[in-house]
Image (cartoon, rainbow, N blue to C red; front, top):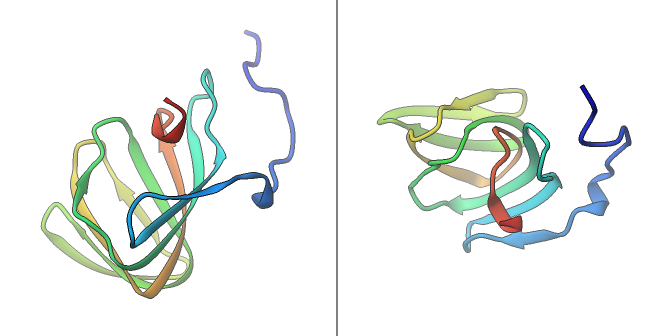
Length: 115
């Protein structure tokens, strides 16, 4: 089987951040057609809008800060070092207190800003 993506190091500064809302900024690190997952740096400042991701399962790793997730009606306080798992089509909402830095890994690849 042939690799669809060449081996390489992806540096954080290579991605261009974009705002999804007033509370949410995303920086794609890897998000390519043919790649089985996507990785993004996500910053949540304040309360984000409730959402449902219809495309993929997403795992968030908390890089820095503290915050709060409501996932399918369950409340969770989160901090650096925590892992948050959100299956596809699960309602959730996140909040930075005041700012939450996350690494988002989505599988299959999140269509996001490219499609």
